[in-house]
Length: 194
Length: 194
DNA sequence: TATATAATCCTAGAGGTCCTAGGCAGGAAG
DNA sequence: CTTCCTGCCTAGGACCTCTAGGATTATATA
Image 1 (cartoon, rainbow over the protein chains, first blue to last red):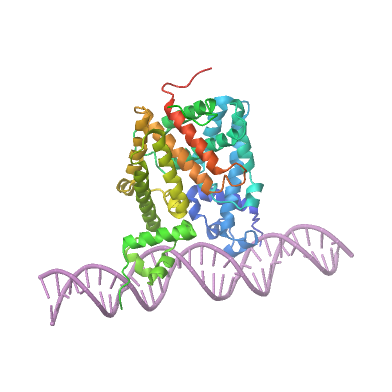
Image 2: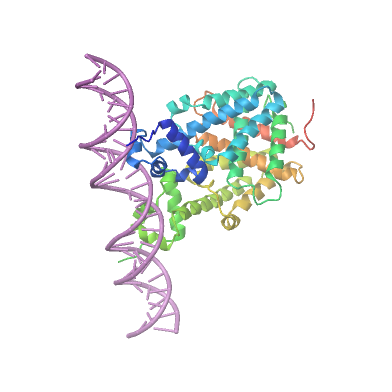
């Protein structure tokens, strides 16, 4: 009997595709085994448990997205870079909804460190080079960007913007404009005009 | 045999508590039946399926949070209202992590309409009365606020801000300052300064 | 080449969850 | 008192997770 050639990498890839098709919560070890033409128990020599599957998808997605963002950012600066960054993020979520939801699973410290999470924050910081911000404002700005972009895409994917005439695309453009303005006029000292 | 007194409302409440204790993904019909001293099959006269449980928790959480936000907003305006609103949201997520994740499940249109989702967007709009914005800018601003606040809280809960010296509270304050400034200087026409 | 080692896959099975079908009993309405 | 409805039951099928131990295949070493 020829071997099926199951690898942890191919397993993660297949799990990611399955997640995009049927949603992350329906990604199951059994179904994956079925797709590899193998018994479910066989996969436990590659995996510790079903949860690891989700973690692998998360790590995979983080790395894929980091690559895309890096490509989108190449040769751009300022608002141009900001928009390219944000669109890379949003487009990825639209193409790969399962992978995107996987990215939100909590990673244990070691896995997080080994993941592309650091690349993400580094690239976000790189965008801020177009705006003059020093620590700790830079970190705060990184968090603002991450929060707003992630939040918008999350809410959009959850259907939060669907039942309203105003299109999500228009709002998205406006949100990015606003972020750009906010970064250029960063409140250096506490905002306290009457 | 005395009846257990299971109600859909008590069921939703218990599910919400369970979600906060063990995470939404571990909320199970069987465990809930156990807590009510009843067989799991008995609950299916109250529920259509396990998914309905999560939907019920989401609706419950939406309503609870709307009440809190309404209370927080009473008698406040401008930045004061903005901060109260945002803190109500963040505090709720900290107290009730399971309920908070439940709020992100996709609701079908009818359920969504019957939920407190509308109250949420109305209250967000109310905040904007302190800033002078007209449609469609108002909708865009509502979405900006929702996205940033939701995104920040999501990332914080997922542990995104944990392994960095800068405290999340400080960043949170700065993010709210920035939102306030952004709303006051809303880019009415496309931002295009060289 | 022969053999040891390790990796891949198997069967068997325990235990958990979801959900359907059909039955019984206790309270309410006639 | 009878009838009906409702809340709960038992029984059971289908699926999933994961463990234990055995068999087979590939690889490294003598």
